[in-house]
Length: 281
Image 1 (tube, rainbow, N blue to C red):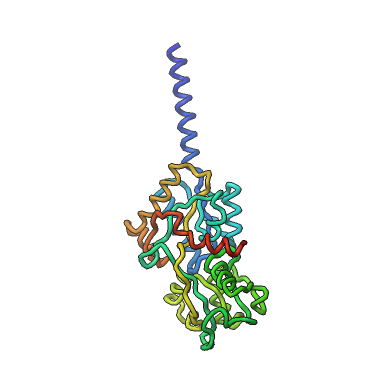
Image 2: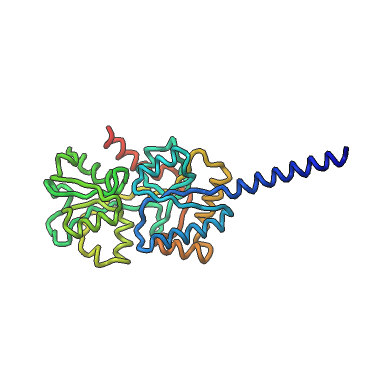
């Protein structure tokens, strides 16, 4: 009888351990849209290896071209976390929870830049671009779409009736390239990305001119799907915030030209919510 009980306990323990082992090997999937780095693949691989070692779980980065695709993957349970823009975060709070916000130049905020070709010395505001070709980054981008659309609304204008033509480049770097190449006479771009490109590719940004920098808005945040377990949520947040504290984490943060990540209140994105309400009214 005792031997039977002992065998049953051993089998139960083995089953439990196997279940825990399988759970520990379940990949953590993180969504990304295109980043600005030339060695994008190498950076993503290094970041994946770093997070895998810290979280003690396999990590997979899932890259897509648009914020809409990343949002859809979060909604359908195919991602646990994602680095998105403040605009899709505000629009989809029913499907995602604020996890952490990057800190840039000492603040968890950034600005949208209105840019024109460097040869354009006359344009002083978006109002001067009437009848011109304009480049947006992504329809779900705050800095690359919502901010300039909101500015046009303050002039009682909409993009289709104001510009001769508009198009989407699907990355902020491509907006800069389009304006530099003369494919567009104006564009809206993430100021953080323009600043970084000015450091690593000055020959590109020197072909453009910043007409104005917007007011500050919450920096594109890291978010978690609503289905993420509390312990996984805390583990990921703590790991991101602790990155500057060790050599490899600090190196990766430096490559991104960020100061680190911080926990932040969702009120940081109130200005985006106000613009969204006006634009989608």
